[in-house]
Image 1 (cartoon, rainbow over the protein chains, first blue to last red):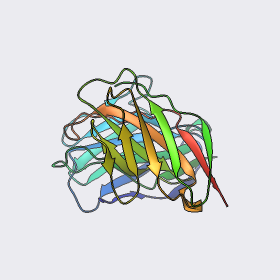
Image 2: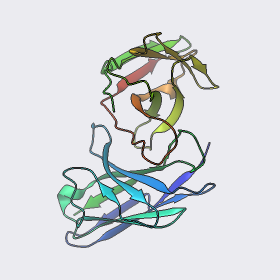
Image 3: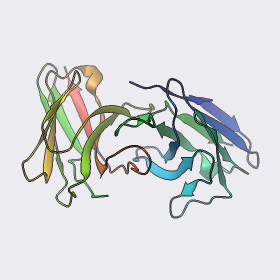
Length: 116
Length: 113
């Protein structure tokens, strides 16, 4: 299947700093990518839909100024957690699917963010 | 997108078939049934999907009832590495331009020796 990568896999930062997470589709182009977050023992929660060349679409309750999404190319979307606080500590996961594919999305390995 | 209902947990003996049920009684005609699984601290892994016909691939089989209100994922010979949370999701098909995957709570499958 198609491969989606994320970088970094794990990051620890101080409260108040910003953290950027990259999501790349390695062997296909994706006009749309999705960002999720997951708390321990919980299911994945969709945060936003990242659209190449246009603004992201955020799910209800997700602060767009807090979680900045940039989808600058057909293989890269970035999520920046601005002014991070301990409550932002979570597992962040992206997904993408080939633009020409009928249905399947593939997920990245996730990024573990810990804010001290 | 239609909601799904899955049992929170199931056990299965190693080498036996694991049958994971899913109810999606409000599914629409253009919504597909997808199955993903998530092993601890990893991203979800795609397993299989279908619209109304039964589907089989190298990982599993998907059985969808004729009225499409429920389905069953079958892992024919479960191994310890199949221990994971299994998610049944329904969403509109037809490409990746708008079909969001909304995750429920899933079924935590424990395969035991």
